[in-house]
Amino acid sequence: MKKVLLISANMMKKPYPVYPLGLDYVAGALNSSYETKILDMNQFKSLEALGEQVREYAPDYIGLSIRNIDNTDTINSRGFLSDYQDLVGQLRQNSQATLILGGSGYTIFPVEFIRALDADYGIAGEGERFPALLHALESKTDVTAIPGVVTRQTATVPYQAWDGEMHRAFDPNAAHTNYYLSYGGMLNLQTKRGCPFRCSYCTYPHIEGGKMRFFKPEEVARQARQLQEAGAKYIFMTDSAFNASYEHSLQVAQAFMEAGISIPWGGFFAPTIPPADYYQKLADAGLTHVEFGTESMCDTMLGNLQKPFVAADVFQAHQKVLKAGLYIAHYFLLGGPGENEETLRETLSGVDQLEKAVFFFFCGIRIYPHTALYGTAVREGQISLSQNLLDPVFYRSPFISDVEIMKRVEAHGGGRLNWLVGAGESKATRILPRLYDRGYTGPLWEHLIP
Ligand code: B12
Ligand code: SF4
Image (cartoon, rainbow, N blue to C red; front, side):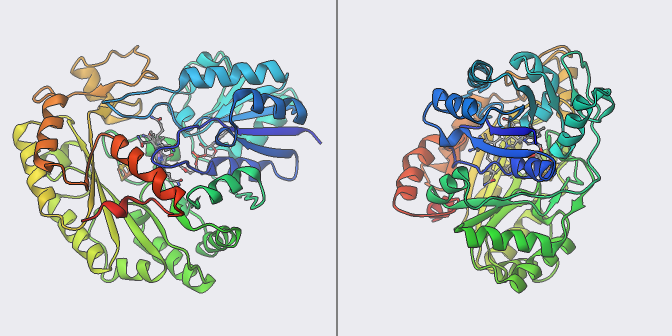
């Protein structure tokens, strides 16, 4: 049986290390036809240590998962391309295997990455197409007939969501699983793929598709149970917006109760108006943390960003979550098209009315291809059509500078611990590792709520 080594290239540990869920699905797709092994860069102290294991395993194929491209922080922007180039150098030194790229970050820049890393192939989009690529390579048929497959000659990659089966192969005893269990105890889970909304700056509908594809609630609960039995202390739902389908998310909650899930969980939510008792029902099933992608409290800006809600909805959603006794974080994206002193003032006074929550403020929005913001930035001359955006470029409002926005947010926040500007790196870096070392679990931002 041929051997496939799957490697998670991600080494970013902020706000906390993230379990490489995508590779469980790739391993699940390959399961019966190939011998597979997952290695995670977070487990290794050095590239040489990884090289040794690669040599020992002697794979026929290496699948490299590229999740993060950069830290998406305008203030302390850091790209990871050179780290990945060093990693690929180490793989090539220790193996003759065919190198195939994939992952969410890869999917945004498939052609740029295959060139920059000089890989053999790539798969943009879902890794469930990995076996099809390997079969085509082995039977010497045309690999480019497979949707999403990228070769060194590919110029453009049309996206097509996977409509076949999706299996997660989770190994509770794998070394990388143990790493996450012993550091923070957070594992993750997906209940559906795809986002039906079209926020102007967002890559998620491109990465996962615009149509929701649901996992059976009983299957999601079975996986949650498996994570719980493995020793997980907290589960993060990686769905683009967990509440994008109220019906399905409630069915998942019901299945969690029936399966006896007792560990806390959280995820991303859109602050839209929920049905009666929605958050209470999720709380009964173990939900503890709600992370709202709020972005602005000014209706003009919410319209410009094509958000599926208005500020009045945010207040209502917030109150309902508070009433259910849950922790709330709101994420804000400032400096988008049309942002000016007045829209910013409206947002900041709106935030003041949101009680008992943590606020993360990001300023300057990362421009990605396949988004409406990309078109705006081209029209405004902020980027050119031929520009390589692998090196992060952030949209800047023509009416107010980032520096001014940051200054105003910081002045308005007045040193409040629950107002985190930028990625909140300095505060988070000071606080989080100490809490994890003391045995605290979960996302931990709740400790900043006043
Ligand atoms: C959930 C999430 C988070 C959660 C994770 C919580 C957790 N415990 O899991 C939180 C909030 C912590 C988070 C943080 C960050 N995130 Co985030 N996150 C996501 C999100 C929404 C889903 C990721 C996920 O798990 N998907 C589910 C799994 C099953 O899918 P997948 O990994 O993509 O794998 C599939 C395919 O990609 C493919 N695949 C994967 N690997 C491989 C390998 C091969 C060989 C092949 C062929 C295929 C393949 O097959 C899989 C199955 O189909 C994505 C956006 C998105 N919709 O993808 C952003 C995303 C990954 N995040 C992003 C970023 C930037 C970050 C942060 C750096 C933000 C910050 N400044 O703090 C941090 C980094 C954290 C870290 N330590 O790495 C970016 C990365 C792009 C970039 N610019 O770098 C994304 C793409 C969003 C975006 N802006 O476009 N994130
Ligand atoms: S920001 Fe959230 S709701 Fe909007 S398109 Fe992206 S994932 Fe969907």
